[in-house]
Image 1: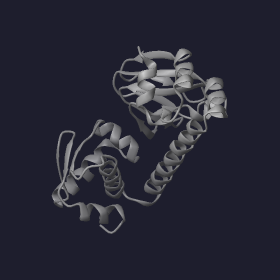
Image 2 (image 1 turned 90 degrees about the vertical axis):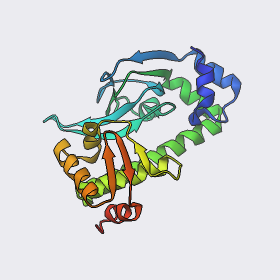
Image 3 (image 1 turned 180 degrees about the vertical axis):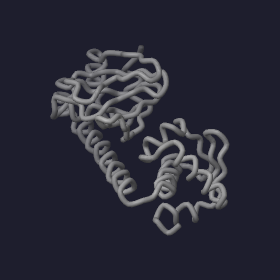
Image 4 (image 1 turned 30 degrees about the vertical axis):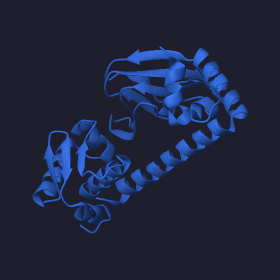
Length: 226
């Protein structure tokens, strides 16, 4: 496993000197997990910094009653455990694989000492945390103020924006059950919302493939005007 080669391709480590990349890689641990495996549980005492190499993970919170809310989806190059590496002793959420995945673990103390020598690494971390804070605020607003069709519309528009393309075709990387957990809905309620958008001519769904037929109407729905 050429960890240095992987680190060079990830946004988090852009601008970091080759010497410090080699230092991080030398002390990094490689781990591979099957699908549906919990990597970190809520309140687990850890002091490592994680980066996804392959696969897809989710960060989520669970209530004592077993209700689950997905907070973030993570793919190759996405780090997690930032707060435990730098500030707290316990992880504030759970991390689970959605498919077979691999991650690397870098000691938190090493990340901290490297960030002190590499301002670009620290800036990259701040930018990632800022994006996630914005995403979290959007999620909170959606869950608190929008009905399920509006939440779905917001999610789809966000996914389209992240694709950086002009296409109106989306391939969901997660199941509808997992999407329901992101939207704070039951799978049945999500199915009804998808059916409503299809009946209104806003989208067409075929399995995990969604084709947006009326982006303007989708935007109106996301803004609460539908």
